[in-house]
Length: 171
Length: 379
Image (tube, rainbow over all chains, first blue to last red):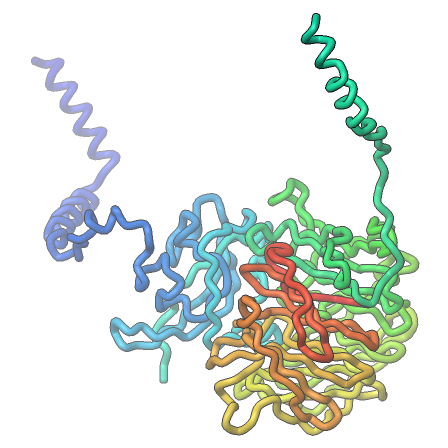
């Protein structure tokens, strides 16, 4: 029995050294909050039916017509292993970018969108998307999509382009 | 035995009828025929695999490809004033698609299509969809100017004969290298002005001057794909204004702008392409790919070619392209001889059309000439 007591004592002390009451409460809180929010998250109940379709939705991020892509000219990272706002694995985001102003019909707002390139691999070669609303020639670089925006990266090879919302455009 | 005797004459006849065997062949390398004004250099950006851009040399009379020049990644290129050399400014990576970046200008002898010289340049080249003014020779061919962008804008001054970089000139945010005289380089600024830097023969800056604005980048920006004329360069605007600039003097002189479109057409019909016009300099004819579209369609390509007389500003013809089964045209070039032909390429279908530049009559369509034929050059 004494051995069992010692064993529990050691494990309890070890746990106490590695954690705190605050972290325990935080973990419990996260668990409870997550469980509470779970039913509120949007669920795509049509997802199973749509999984059989191969053509991307016209209003989805794998379609060139997706609202965020209004000033893009390049390959959509959402078709290349990334998403509309994340680079594919193994690539590096460009720290500099051009911007566009795109209208989101779903909420009626205009958004400033940053078009960053994902760099370090050769061109993705799928989902080439050329839309140029508000695009301007190279003498206005901040609005130009003919430049390779990987130009300031350690590896300047261009792979694909993401479209990151920076905020609501002020009128 | 009887059967063999009967069949012998047949066999003999067959042997006699068999042609002699083909002679042994000797492997050789083809030599280019004498240069023709109807040759065109087709720049293929190879957009799906951009580290492998290339230039095809195509014969516009015999409709055949004559050879190829390697062009690397996000290429700038131009022909020397005598047409004898193709200069390609490009970037390579040590391990194909990755690794140490090397920027280099390669010079190809256009009579053999072999690279005869190269100049290593700083890793600052402007990595951009190209135009005729990303890499440009001085009129006498002694200096070569290469646009840099990091994104700070500047340009390199090279000596092609010596194979050296002479220096770098800061352009205060202005872009492109538009050459004139001995030795001036003009660049387009966001303010709508032209910066003109005058160099000495060693490529050192002597003076610089900024022009008055000649366009408004907000209201009606100009395409950077300028079109050379006998005395300067024509720039077209998104809405179809023609800015004819005379670069023959110490500073650029701006002609009064005129419009490609009528008041009724303005805003509906507009120019659009990656190479948005061509000019036959002696005839004074301007060829522009035009399409119907609104804001954001400036790279859409032309469904028609509109032809203008530069002196009178009169539209001479509209040549529809769809009737020939052509997709919208994204690049045009015209030969400079008295019997000129117009070359026009399409984007995704990558077709090359050859038209009579005087009548618009279609002579030939070379299907799928490459992948992304976005710029055409000729001597």
